[in-house]
Length: 211
Image (cartoon, rainbow, N blue to C red; front, side, top):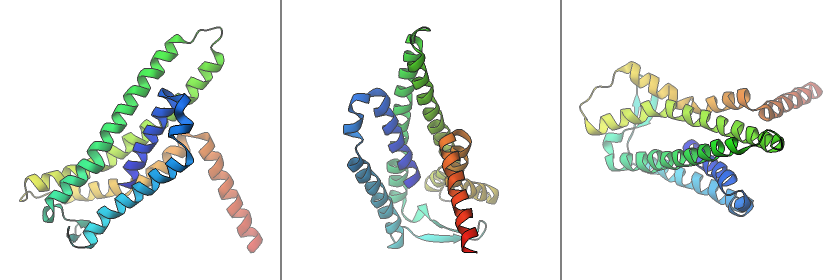
Protein backbone atom coordinates (compact mmCIF):
# COMPACT_ATOMS: atom_id res chain seq x y z
CA UNK A 1 0.00 0.00 0.00
CA UNK A 2 2.87 2.39 0.75
CA UNK A 3 4.31 1.81 -2.73
CA UNK A 4 1.16 2.69 -4.65
CA UNK A 5 0.33 5.66 -2.40
CA UNK A 6 3.84 7.02 -3.01
CA UNK A 7 3.31 6.56 -6.75
CA UNK A 8 0.04 8.47 -6.39
CA UNK A 9 1.83 11.30 -4.57
CA UNK A 10 4.55 11.37 -7.25
CA UNK A 11 1.87 11.58 -9.95
CA UNK A 12 0.19 14.48 -8.13
CA UNK A 13 3.57 16.18 -7.72
CA UNK A 14 4.27 15.96 -11.48
CA UNK A 15 0.68 17.02 -12.24
CA UNK A 16 0.99 20.19 -10.15
CA UNK A 17 4.50 20.95 -11.48
CA UNK A 18 3.32 20.81 -15.11
CA UNK A 19 -0.34 21.89 -14.94
CA UNK A 20 -0.02 24.50 -12.15
CA UNK A 21 3.70 25.47 -12.11
CA UNK A 22 3.08 28.91 -10.55
CA UNK A 23 1.43 27.31 -7.51
CA UNK A 24 3.89 24.42 -7.14
CA UNK A 25 5.82 25.88 -4.18
CA UNK A 26 2.53 26.54 -2.37
CA UNK A 27 0.87 23.16 -2.96
CA UNK A 28 4.06 21.07 -2.69
CA UNK A 29 5.82 22.71 0.24
CA UNK A 30 8.12 20.66 2.48
CA UNK A 31 5.59 20.71 5.29
CA UNK A 32 2.81 19.34 3.09
CA UNK A 33 5.14 16.70 1.68
CA UNK A 34 6.02 15.51 5.20
CA UNK A 35 2.34 15.46 6.22
CA UNK A 36 1.42 13.46 3.09
CA UNK A 37 4.17 10.88 3.67
CA UNK A 38 3.34 10.46 7.37
CA UNK A 39 -0.35 10.06 6.49
CA UNK A 40 0.48 7.35 3.96
CA UNK A 41 2.56 5.38 6.47
CA UNK A 42 -0.02 5.73 9.26
CA UNK A 43 -2.89 4.68 6.99
CA UNK A 44 -0.91 1.69 5.68
CA UNK A 45 0.07 0.71 9.22
CA UNK A 46 -3.60 0.71 10.23
CA UNK A 47 -4.42 -1.85 7.53
CA UNK A 48 -1.55 -4.04 8.74
CA UNK A 49 -2.67 -3.60 12.37
CA UNK A 50 -6.14 -4.94 11.54
CA UNK A 51 -4.55 -8.23 10.50
CA UNK A 52 -2.46 -8.36 13.68
CA UNK A 53 -5.55 -7.73 15.84
CA UNK A 54 -7.26 -10.74 14.27
CA UNK A 55 -9.87 -8.97 12.15
CA UNK A 56 -8.26 -10.57 9.10
CA UNK A 57 -6.65 -13.97 9.63
CA UNK A 58 -3.08 -14.45 8.46
CA UNK A 59 -2.35 -17.94 7.16
CA UNK A 60 0.84 -19.75 6.19
CA UNK A 61 0.64 -21.01 2.60
CA UNK A 62 2.89 -24.02 2.39
CA UNK A 63 3.00 -24.09 -1.42
CA UNK A 64 4.57 -20.63 -1.61
CA UNK A 65 6.24 -20.70 1.85
CA UNK A 66 4.80 -17.32 2.86
CA UNK A 67 2.38 -15.88 5.41
CA UNK A 68 -0.47 -14.00 3.78
CA UNK A 69 -3.77 -12.40 4.87
CA UNK A 70 -6.71 -14.67 4.05
CA UNK A 71 -9.27 -12.45 2.23
CA UNK A 72 -12.09 -14.96 2.78
CA UNK A 73 -11.96 -14.41 6.59
CA UNK A 74 -12.62 -10.66 6.26
CA UNK A 75 -14.19 -10.00 2.84
CA UNK A 76 -15.27 -6.44 3.72
CA UNK A 77 -11.72 -5.54 4.73
CA UNK A 78 -10.29 -7.16 1.59
CA UNK A 79 -12.71 -5.30 -0.70
CA UNK A 80 -12.04 -2.04 1.18
CA UNK A 81 -8.30 -2.55 0.72
CA UNK A 82 -8.69 -3.13 -3.03
CA UNK A 83 -10.90 -0.03 -3.40
CA UNK A 84 -9.03 2.35 -1.08
CA UNK A 85 -5.51 1.25 -1.93
CA UNK A 86 -5.62 0.12 -5.55
CA UNK A 87 -8.72 1.48 -7.28
CA UNK A 88 -8.84 5.09 -6.02
CA UNK A 89 -5.08 5.58 -6.34
CA UNK A 90 -5.19 4.08 -9.85
CA UNK A 91 -7.84 6.61 -10.87
CA UNK A 92 -5.68 9.47 -9.52
CA UNK A 93 -2.58 8.17 -11.34
CA UNK A 94 -4.49 7.66 -14.60
CA UNK A 95 -6.10 11.12 -14.45
CA UNK A 96 -2.77 12.85 -13.71
CA UNK A 97 -0.96 10.91 -16.44
CA UNK A 98 -3.57 11.74 -19.10
CA UNK A 99 -3.63 15.46 -18.20
CA UNK A 100 0.18 15.65 -18.16
CA UNK A 101 0.55 13.90 -21.52
CA UNK A 102 -2.08 16.18 -23.08
CA UNK A 103 -0.20 19.29 -21.91
CA UNK A 104 3.20 17.96 -23.00
CA UNK A 105 1.92 17.04 -26.48
CA UNK A 106 0.14 20.38 -26.88
CA UNK A 107 3.17 22.42 -25.77
CA UNK A 108 5.62 20.41 -27.88
CA UNK A 109 3.60 21.36 -30.97
CA UNK A 110 3.77 25.06 -30.01
CA UNK A 111 7.57 25.21 -29.67
CA UNK A 112 9.04 27.23 -32.55
CA UNK A 113 12.25 25.98 -34.24
CA UNK A 114 14.01 29.35 -33.72
CA UNK A 115 13.33 30.53 -30.19
CA UNK A 116 12.24 27.38 -28.48
CA UNK A 117 15.57 25.74 -27.66
CA UNK A 118 15.43 26.36 -23.90
CA UNK A 119 11.76 25.51 -23.77
CA UNK A 120 12.42 22.36 -25.81
CA UNK A 121 15.18 21.30 -23.37
CA UNK A 122 12.82 21.88 -20.44
CA UNK A 123 10.14 19.83 -22.19
CA UNK A 124 12.59 16.97 -22.81
CA UNK A 125 13.60 17.04 -19.15
CA UNK A 126 9.95 16.92 -18.07
CA UNK A 127 9.23 14.09 -20.49
CA UNK A 128 12.15 12.07 -19.11
CA UNK A 129 10.77 12.37 -15.58
CA UNK A 130 7.25 11.49 -16.75
CA UNK A 131 8.57 8.52 -18.72
CA UNK A 132 10.36 7.18 -15.63
CA UNK A 133 7.20 7.60 -13.55
CA UNK A 134 5.08 5.80 -16.16
CA UNK A 135 7.55 2.89 -16.29
CA UNK A 136 7.44 2.60 -12.48
CA UNK A 137 3.63 2.76 -12.45
CA UNK A 138 3.43 0.12 -15.19
CA UNK A 139 5.83 -2.08 -13.23
CA UNK A 140 3.67 -1.70 -10.13
CA UNK A 141 0.54 -2.91 -11.92
CA UNK A 142 2.38 -5.79 -13.57
CA UNK A 143 3.58 -6.81 -10.10
CA UNK A 144 0.33 -6.41 -8.16
CA UNK A 145 -2.50 -7.12 -10.62
CA UNK A 146 -2.12 -10.95 -10.45
CA UNK A 147 -2.21 -10.91 -6.63
CA UNK A 148 -5.26 -8.61 -6.48
CA UNK A 149 -7.00 -10.70 -9.14
CA UNK A 150 -6.35 -13.79 -7.05
CA UNK A 151 -7.94 -12.06 -4.04
CA UNK A 152 -11.02 -11.11 -6.07
CA UNK A 153 -11.40 -14.69 -7.35
CA UNK A 154 -11.19 -16.05 -3.78
CA UNK A 155 -13.80 -13.52 -2.60
CA UNK A 156 -16.22 -14.16 -5.47
CA UNK A 157 -15.72 -17.94 -5.63
CA UNK A 158 -14.55 -19.17 -2.19
CA UNK A 159 -14.37 -22.76 -3.43
CA UNK A 160 -12.03 -21.86 -6.30
CA UNK A 161 -8.70 -23.67 -6.34
CA UNK A 162 -5.85 -21.40 -7.40
CA UNK A 163 -3.03 -23.34 -9.11
CA UNK A 164 0.18 -23.43 -7.08
CA UNK A 165 2.25 -21.91 -9.90
CA UNK A 166 -0.16 -18.94 -10.08
CA UNK A 167 0.14 -18.39 -6.32
CA UNK A 168 3.93 -18.55 -6.49
CA UNK A 169 4.10 -16.20 -9.47
CA UNK A 170 1.75 -13.62 -7.92
CA UNK A 171 3.66 -13.59 -4.60
CA UNK A 172 7.02 -13.42 -6.34
CA UNK A 173 5.90 -10.48 -8.48
CA UNK A 174 4.35 -8.40 -5.67
CA UNK A 175 7.17 -9.09 -3.18
CA UNK A 176 9.86 -8.10 -5.69
CA UNK A 177 8.17 -4.87 -6.85
CA UNK A 178 10.21 -2.51 -4.65
CA UNK A 179 13.41 -4.02 -6.05
CA UNK A 180 12.23 -3.20 -9.58
CA UNK A 181 12.08 0.51 -8.74
CA UNK A 182 15.80 0.60 -7.92
CA UNK A 183 16.60 -1.04 -11.27
CA UNK A 184 14.25 1.30 -13.18
CA UNK A 185 15.76 4.41 -11.56
CA UNK A 186 19.29 3.14 -12.23
CA UNK A 187 18.54 2.53 -15.92
CA UNK A 188 16.48 5.67 -16.63
CA UNK A 189 17.87 8.33 -14.28
CA UNK A 190 21.48 9.52 -14.63
CA UNK A 191 21.32 11.53 -11.37
CA UNK A 192 20.24 8.41 -9.47
CA UNK A 193 23.12 6.45 -11.05
CA UNK A 194 25.66 9.09 -10.03
CA UNK A 195 24.27 9.27 -6.47
CA UNK A 196 24.35 5.46 -6.19
CA UNK A 197 27.95 5.34 -7.44
CA UNK A 198 28.98 8.07 -4.98
CA UNK A 199 27.35 6.19 -2.14
CA UNK A 200 29.03 2.92 -3.13
CA UNK A 201 32.42 4.61 -3.53
CA UNK A 202 32.09 6.33 -0.13
CA UNK A 203 31.12 3.05 1.54
CA UNK A 204 34.07 1.31 -0.13
CA UNK A 205 36.47 4.05 1.00
CA UNK A 206 35.11 3.94 4.56
CA UNK A 207 35.46 0.16 4.62
CA UNK A 208 39.09 0.41 3.40
CA UNK A 209 39.93 2.98 6.09
CA UNK A 210 38.40 0.84 8.83
CA UNK A 211 40.34 -2.23 7.72
